[in-house]
Length: 435
Image 1 (spheres, helix red, strand yellow):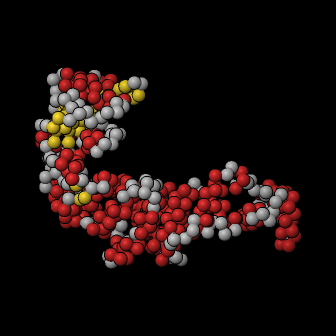
Image 2: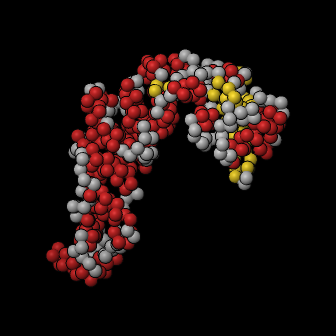
Image 3: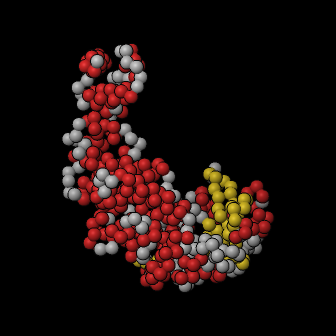
């Protein structure tokens, strides 16, 4: 146990509530500590978003301390109770878990049984050393049974104990190891990385939902390129995106094909932007092979359990990035419909990365952004013609309606039709010519 000043100088309502939970448990004769990520983040100098508490009190004893109105069982079989309440008017909640040791993980996700035990054994069953730390907020002491504090100082991500055993317990830990190392800028412990490489094929037993969540977090983070390299080095890309893994077997080609990831902003970006950056070289090379694109995108969507909205954003960005790069030189009628899409921001981010990679000027993208800053009525005016105008002119509704209205809209956006009267006159000319 290492004495240390209070790790949490910012007394937020969440921290205060968690501290009160520990204080009440200790006041009733139990051992209780902050546990896991909230300790790790505080040592790294970051404000934790969530606080977890570990204790030797059982779920029934936790309920007895806080009462049924302030507790809710969320994993009773695993000794987990949610304690909720208010601090300074803010609703707060803390997950309180009984110290435990886990039995066999026959499903590769959850233990078949647990045994409630000591904090030392509880630390041993966790995934990585940096996540196995406790903190006593009453005594202001870090409690480290696994060498997590040293690994934080060394900036190393290491599995607790035998990395093979940790992976057998939960195969998703292979992706989590890379995500945590990338997030904190840590080196991946060689033994842990080797264990991931030996077990990479086992990632296929993890549900698509859990896999997709981890991959999304990896690709949203600024360290996305480093993380993707690690996914390739450990062989995980062979199973999470087998459609593209063979293209990356040659280092120089892999570096070229993933170069867009490097060009994305060094800030969190929406997931579709990063996935589009990975898919762009294939999309560019497969121009005209729509069936292949649809097959591959559907396979990725199903494997990662992505939503239709996410994949639509990816496809829109890929299809329209070049239009945005040339936005200041193309006819406005070609650019303006792209700007009206709800997916415009991912498309702009991808376009900017592509232009930067090609060392092209950003005039087109800057032009598009300047238009978007104007009132929408300026760059997206109401159409001069609609279906009722065509009906009043004597046309019967049919397939030709859409074609005529689309052409009128193009002429309007390009400044060739400036008023309702001009549009009506043009329409009459089109009708007479057709007749």
